[in-house]
Image (cartoon, rainbow over all chains, first blue to last red; front, side, top):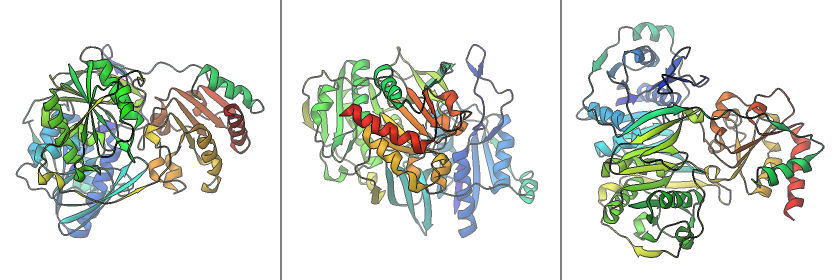
Length: 245
Length: 313
């Protein structure tokens, strides 16, 4: 089976978010970048599927040269080779067009990625790629099992799950508990250094959205503490001050 | 300008988040057509929220959600109505549909939008609620996917004109088979809820969730939990609120026995009000909360439930 795993290069989940240049640029200073946590699930499942039935895993990232350590980490976890599209990921459409262009004619059986990136949280790319390639896309995928040419998937919906069957090829946006995150071992780290990482220039420069500036949420006021022996006061505050009940 | 609003239903009842989408479209565009699939018991609410027309899709094959076919039908509806704006609420169906339709009609798409637009610019939530990006939609056609509480639902609209809508759909849109849907019936859905009651490790075990459910019931709230709680199988995964779970933006979020890890705060920080109940006064959640009770959940929560019951009677 030939699997393409698309990964994002994003700030660690514990990062403090701030901006520079008049709130137009993300402040990278002191921020550690990681493989998107959802993408990491997709990669982990791809490695398991390869262990079961053989094949190859190509990892794809749309990003500038600074993302290469993140790509190398994906190679250390178990991808065989990598492609980096040498461009800043302008928006979801821009990224989807690059992925579709890599996939066209390459005959991947599966294209896996995270349900969303944890920087922009759009959750749009997998469905856009599906539409561009004329293929089904399923997200958020909690379990993915493949037998022959058919996949069985469970997808999270509001208040429950949907059980789905479909034929390969397709695109899936993954989330837990699809697989356990894999930690690269020493052999993986060593071999990742020499695995092929091809750099390609973008094939399309279409984007339809543009960030004009960033904002941080207003600072929170102090918490109003209520004595546990005076719950009536709490009810009064919720009802008459916050007006939420 | 005409806008189309995609309306979702649960067991035939219109989702409140979809009514927010209708009102958002009304505030933005002036003239609104809504599109609804399958059984719709309370179409009047769609009119009240601001739609003058409801396109009702009655094709039997679309009684259950089908992402590819719904996307084709909605794109067709945008063309028919000459709609330059599509508004929908973020959901497990709305997300993939919005992305597919954006490709079909060549539209600019922005999701997680938290308020009404200013010109072609909308404010969307990014970094899992830790920041916002003011984002320009650079195309003539626009799709806006809104977060809960992005707008107040209007209730002063007229009775809508209801029109059957049944465009031809290609067989290739029916290649994904839904075998079974597992859904807890009768519960308030987490992303829809105005009030969310969540529990953490302070509750000590799944057997103690009764008091969370009792409080939620009195408030008409949904129940949620932190990641470790769903990881330990105390609660189902779809209740996990946080960075890698559901991000909520209710009017009131009640956190019980939750210390407040940064990953959990990321999922709740667009709540209007946060109430923290925890016996540890140093719990980080108190820094994010508007109201706090330092006390034992096993003592405080039943008292709060009783007090709320009295107020409601």
